Image (cartoon, rainbow, N blue to C red; front, side, top):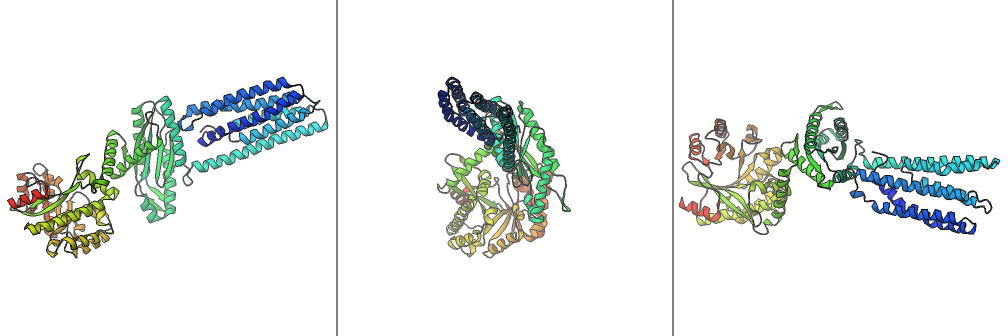
Length: 619
C-alpha cells in the first residue's frame, strides 16, 4: 500500500480539514486587529483574504470526499489536493510570521514567534499519520525561526536557536512516535493475528475500493474463496495447537502461489479469500482465476508434517468474477461462498465457478425455500401412492410419495424441494405431516377393506435422528394404528444412514422395531452400501435403484449389478423391491432372476389417494 493508504487514514485527514480552517479563520481576525493598530493592516487583510480563499477551496475538497464510492485513482487525486491544502495553509502561517517578526517597535515579533511555534505544534498534532506531510511542514515552519534567532547577534539568540532546533526534533520525534503507534494499531486491526494475512475488516474495504476502480475505469477481476476440507477433524483429533500450525503452513503455501498484484486474506476459521489484480479482458481474468485455483488445490494437498504428524488435507474453492457492472463487494463474496459450497456438495477437493446457471439455480432455491415456509399452512402438500406389485402383478403394497403444488411455482419436484427442506430444517415439520397423513390413510384403507401387506414411507435422515422422532412415531401410531397396521409399516432410509453414528442409528431402529416397524434401504447400490452394513443394520428390505433398472435392456453392467444385489439379498435375507420398472423386458428380466416385488410406471404411476383406491378395486 502506498503511504498509509487506508480508509482510516483518509477519514482522519478529512476530519482535520474543518479543524484547520477554524484554527486559521478565527485567530486570523486577531492578526487583522493587530495590523490595524500597528500600521500593517493591508498586508494583514491581504493575508486574511488568502486564508478565506484557501478555506473556500478546502471546503470544496472536504465536500468532494466520498470514501465508499471513491476508487484508488480518485483517492490519489483527492490526496494530492488535500496535501496541497495543508501545505498552503501552513505556508500562510509562515507568511504572517515573516510579516510580524520584523516589527520590533510594538513587540509584535513575540506574537510572530508564538505563531510559528503554535503552527508547528498544530502541524505535528494534525499531520502525524503522514510523514510526507508533517516532516516538510515542520522544516518549513521551524527553520526560519532557528535562522531568525541565530541572526540576533546575541548569546541568548544562539541559545534560542539551539532550543528551536531541539523543539523541531521533539516535534518530529512526537509525530514519528504517534505515527508508529498508529501504524501498529492499524496493522493489528487489519491483519490476522495467527497467520499474519489481511483480515476480514481490511478485505471488505479493499474490495470496495477495487469495485470503485472497476466502475471508473472498467475491467474485470476475480475472487477465490478457499475452505479447507475436514479441518475440524484435525482440530478434534490432534488438538487446536496442531490446527493452528496447520493454518500457518496453509497460509504460507497460499502466499507462495499468489501472483503479483493479488491480495490474500483470512476470513476466519479455515476460510481464506484471494482478490485478483484487475484485468481488462474477461476471458483472461477467468482463465487466471481457474488456473490459480487449480495450482492452489495441488499445493494444499501436499503432505504437511507438524509435530511428527503427517497430515493430508484438500480444499474446496469457489470463484466469483467481479466486473464494473456491480459495486457491492459483499455480493461477490456471497457468490464465491455459494460456489464453494457447491464444490463441497460435489464431493469436495474441487473448484466451482459462479456463473449464470448456478445463479439461476440459487435464485430458484431461494424462492422455493421462501415459499416452503408457507406451504403447509396453505395445505399445498399432498401424498400420492405408488402401487407395489408381486410376481403375479397383484398389489401387495404402496409407497407414499409427497407432492407439492404451489400456486406460483406450480408442481415442484421432490428432488428440488426435499434437499432444501432438509437444509433449512423444514423437513421435520414436513416429515411429521407425511407421517400423520400416511398413518391416517392406512387406517382408512383398512376400514374400507383395502388390504396391503406393506406400506412404505420415506424418512429423511435429518428427521430420523431428530430428538423428537421416536416420540412422534409413538404418538401417531397410538392415534391411528393398531397392532396389525404397525406390522405393515416400512420406513425407507437412504444409504446416507451409514455416514452417521452407526451405533446411534441402530439404537433408533431397535426402538422402532419394538413397535413392529420394519426398515428398507432405498437406492441400494448407489452410495455407501457394503456387505458389512447389511449385517450391522436391521434391514428388512432393499430397493434396487431405478438408475440400474432403466438401463437393463442395453447395459450388461447394470444387469450384472442387479443379479449381484439379488444374490446378496438371498444370502442375507432381506426382501428386494425393484424400482423404476417401465418395460415388459425389464419386468421379465427381474422375474427370471427371482425378484419378488416391483414398482414403476409399467404397472402404475404414483396415484392420488382416490385414484389408488380405484386402481386397487379394479385389480
